[in-house]
Length: 277
Image 1 (tube, rainbow, N blue to C red):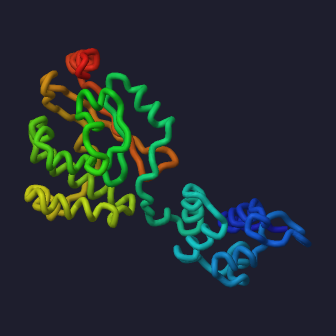
Image 2: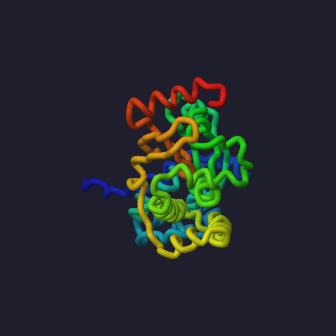
Image 3: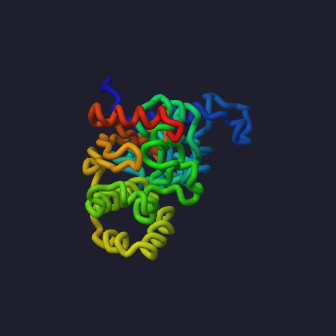
């Protein structure tokens, strides 16, 4: 007997369907020969024909569209990771990004921030709103607690806060790098609509931002690896910048500024020992 041809999409759909509890969907439990939902029940929830859905599980009928896969993902109650896997095996690519906005920061991430005792660190959204930070960030970068939550945005602070400009050795160069990286982050996260208000606000308030934004440059964070900032008490600080994705939260990332030399590390430690820090 010839081996059954591989059908990862069909196998995955069947396995996910078998895990669903019919009672949770208000469906009758009588006369069910196998666990989970029936094919026609999933098809009805996804608004596709039962015949076509059956073919999909059987590896027939061609590749589904992204819209159909999205409806099937909702019908099966898939989470973000499961939905991405469905697209990867069904279409060979991840789904388009869906930005969900600020959903808060879990406590375990706040503990991670606090573990960076002498390295400023914060968690930001795809539109660069600061949601959480550690004590070193308050001492070295800025006291985010003093800034109203609605204004606690990295790009807004960089262009509209005089202290940020004063802390930079090459403000215009850094501004171009930041705007290009911001544009890339927003597009990657599908957060264009969420960022529109901030972009409009900065375009009105800062001619420099408006001009840089019109350049349409896009780049990653590699241009921000090394940072040199002037601190009002500690003087010049050399920092190495790293950005980390947050597992399970595509809407967030974590930035960490590591002291780039012994002198910077000593000055940060002194700031944190002082009453002001």
